[in-house]
Image (tube, rainbow over all chains, first blue to last red; front, side, top):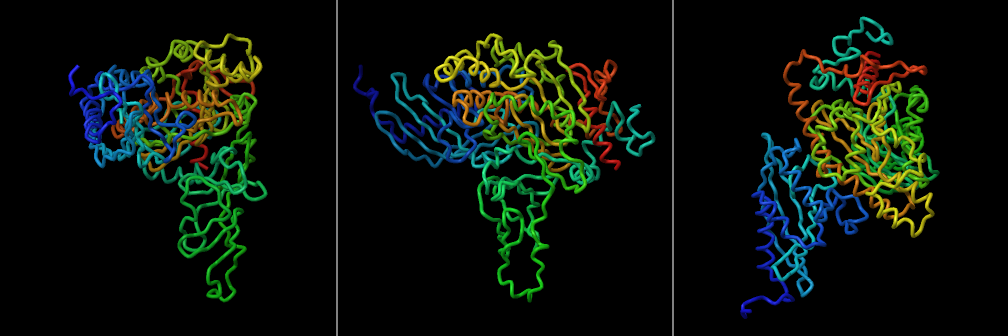
Length: 166
Length: 421
């Protein structure tokens, strides 16, 4: 063991958390789904709630409430060519900014940030703005996502089909 | 030719018993006419009773293009008011749902009671006592309810709701059995828009033909039991024309009556749920709840805007000739086991909504219909599938196989009747 290795219970810094959020966004925009699936802990959830302020996601209707199996199915849907709305998968570019660490300790790091995403498919360009709440944890293999909650600012309005991963 | 229609109708150029002209999706003038001739001359679904369960509860909705407020007054009576101040027309409510004691116009402060009556007018002295307040309540529509479904109509002499629903009532009663003995409640909704005409969605609720192809990615992601139960082209299902534009598509005949066959084996996918429910419920109730969790084996299409679709309500709202808003309302058991309601939520999220594994593919093909309809405007939309073996039923209905376009023919027959009235 070298002395430069970070202890597993060391709090995650803003710099580390930002870099990790950008990595996640870049993997999605570049359709590197296997690498994306590997970023998550076994108990993690990917959530796109409807109601602003919702916290009891399990007992509430969401747009997405994915465990690892559902995330893998979502990726299959994007890559199998069987889904007419995901053939081709829309191209996306997302910008993450306004990062703020809400809490960071031995248990994990709550990072909140803004996401502006533009999608393009079949001559149509659309944008979605969202607040994203991440919970990152440090593991022996590096940082992992324990929870990602995407709060679209227009979540209670009528949306268009979202044929990709927010 | 359809013998139930007067021959030589001016609308024959647009709709015949087995076909409809492409311009039904694209003609703006026709759309304007539909919004009054169809939507203001029929019963339009506006709410489920559980959405406005208590006095003061309200939600906003539309009847055609008219904004309305659905509200339960202090005495428990439901009103549907046109959401328009009688002074200078501003909406008196822009909140989707909530609880209130009155509706106050934000422009000049005219205040209305829950029953729609005008209660307060600021600086009323300026009218010199000549303002006829009793005549200036919010405009209220006729409201009737059947088994929790609340409908409104702009037509004062519209036939009673129970007559209008007719043969559909039996299917509504069967649909409501998915409460498994608990009152059925709404559990949130997915709302999305697609760039296409509202009738494209209306057709889809009783279109089994598209399922194996359009929903291939859903079937690939689903478990084996779910895939088997959705093998609807080979299960002896059928579509029935129920009159007045309504129709039912029975996809899974084994799930028509959720209170029957309670002794049938519990599907493997629901074993964990059943085990959890057994802690607090006797075996028969466990079986009843588990059987109801996945919803019914049929889609009931109520003309013009509600689908009671397997396990949820599908509400369609025309926006313009080429834009439609759809809401998929999740259902649950009021006071029922949380685990069962959670299971229903997860099933809903899996298929429905803008991020579901089914809805986006539906929306994509409807979008393609609207795009394609810009070509060959003189061509027909073909609605003749299953017509050659359609049976006439003794009560006057018609029935054909599950993938027949019988339900669409029923809807367009009603459309034609209202448009030529």
